[in-house]
Length: 76
Image (tube, rainbow, N blue to C red; front, side, top):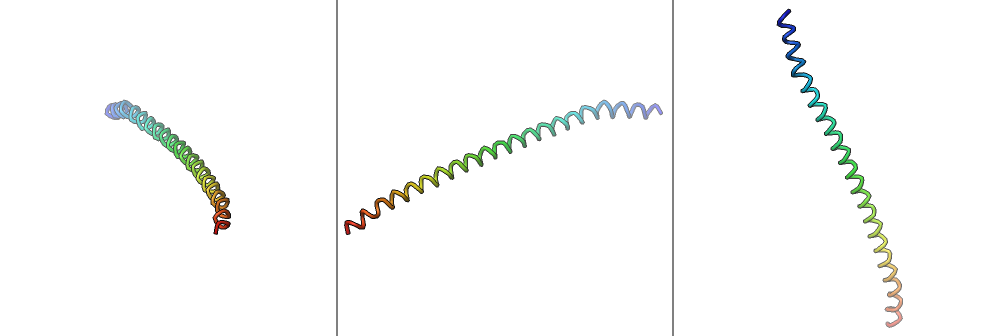
């Protein structure tokens, strides 16, 4: 019985810090994943803004080409 008490004491002495370390690791990992998702969301927002800007730029260039095109046809 005495050995069992000693074994339980040793398990509790070493078990509690190990559980705390593993819990802290899990929390840290979850925080890093949350930051990563947040960064990915920000990246997607920037990609979308870039897409809209490029689309608008191409639309303006097409309008410019259309406006210049009749002038070229008249000179022929």
